[in-house]
Image (cartoon, rainbow, N blue to C red; front, side, top):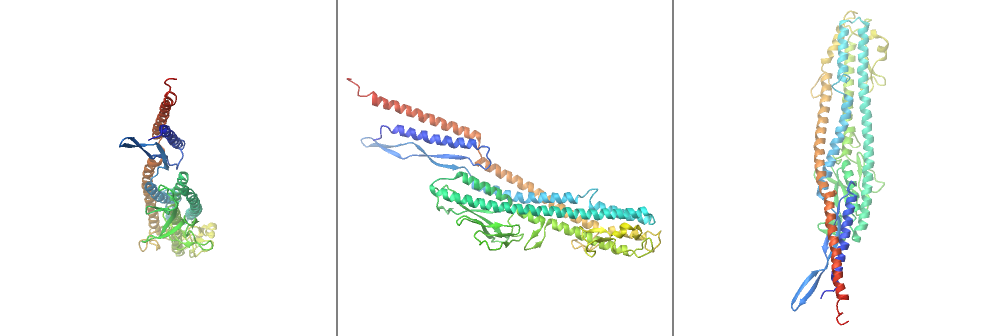
Length: 508
């Protein structure tokens, strides 16, 4: 037979449970604008049933109320992984797009101030000198246009080198950020490992770890591996919904199978580290050196994009987009200056002497002219007559200057050329074209991955983010349930009052 006071206990449980449900809802509302917060919901369950005999052979079971089962956060780990996959791709292509944008700003082609225009003006000045070889003004223009050309080479080289240094500095900052995030994830792992065996779900710690992983996904591609819940078996967790500790693993190399490297070892509480071209696995002794990592090894993400753009890699030497562009400019300056100097040496100057073969030079190493150091020789800055415009020594002969002007179309041997020889103008067009194609490709892929990332984030927010409309609905539902439980207590109280105070009074 059931207790006379059973109804009070049933209603009391309802009051208590819905009060906690309202508390969870209120917490959701309070964190509606908190980025990275996952909404929480108190799951309800029935308490034990009570068997009651109705008399004779008739019996039944009555519920004894409701209780809160689990206060869990609403999260979809699969959507989280999809978001991070797209985030790491977008960070890679967006970083390359931004770096190529800075390169394009420096190259500044086509424009009135670029290298191509400087070359055209230089060839035009030689053409004008061939018409008036005895004109001092025409010689002065040649010298001035030559100086403008060398200054353009110098500026482009120094600017590219500066940006390249900025990219390296940014990569160093990213490396420090990655290693800091790995340490933070490891620390949260420890706190989660301490809390879960006590029977609680540390939702705040789960959210904190997810925020760290979301940020880490911008820098490197990694794999999240749970270690406390495998193959349906819980290991150290008192609840099956517990997410447990996780390992952070990167996969090195493009070949299959890839080489996994554990950067966060949750079971042992150890953390590895990563560099711009190296790594150290978790658990490696402090004295052990960082292991080299090639371009092919490096996990995708912002760090890889920065390394590929600035071009330094310990195990593969110097490579990369900015280094490649600097090498192209250096080769252009060297091949152009060498060919021009040789052609200039075949002419005669205004005094009838053989033309000098050092019109363009390098103050530190004349035999190794580069874009950074190319200049007009100081002697030509002092004496215009040294410019060799004649082929026979006659002051009125401008055929030598005309031959120099025709070098605009002369085939020169460039290592980076797709053909055996090509003119300096066509070679430069090829360099600019390759840069433009890579920049356009990076921009297109950055936009595509951004759209996919936004779509994944929208799906994730639809699951995890707080909807004020939904929370208001749940609040009203819990409020009505709470009020109904309170009214039930009032009704049971009136019944008990009748039993206690209103029965057995006949004859008094």
